[in-house]
Image (cartoon, rainbow, N blue to C red; front, side, top):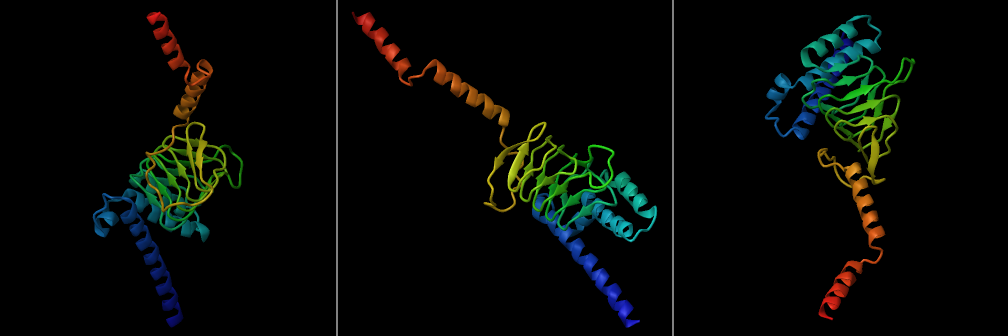
Length: 238
């Protein structure tokens, strides 16, 4: 009797600890969060995560049908669809949440941040691992899609609207369609960076390089323009 009550108490305490960590993730990463009560009652992303944790627990214990029903109920209530088979680490923060889709074999590390419209999807009908693996401390901006059994390394960022189809190394930034790695430091240089609006623009960078190259071709000598001006002035004086 005491052993059973002790086991149940340990389970309850573990779930409470996970819930507190999820709440703290919202506090740390959403400047609009005003308190624990407001977060618990009014954050659909948090509600979706909690319902998923329950559905995933039941799925792991091979309870039929009910995990799927919980997942569909969470989708109807929150606008976030997380397959009951997906594996989610602690500290996930889904901001706004509407339109987020997380597939069956997706794996999400700790302290990951996602914004509305993010898709962690598959690319075919093959069975087995077919959804992405997201490392710790990754930020995925609004409308981004990460597709297939690829890996996004720790501390990386995926820009808004990007479509990522290939593996992303640690500490890198990916933007564009298809996604291209534009910054990759190779080492962690700072704390988690949520400023996903401050991303490189590879297209603008490319045009700037082309413009610089054309300028060099038109004026091989950097002082040619000045020399031409001086020559014209000397001709006028004579």
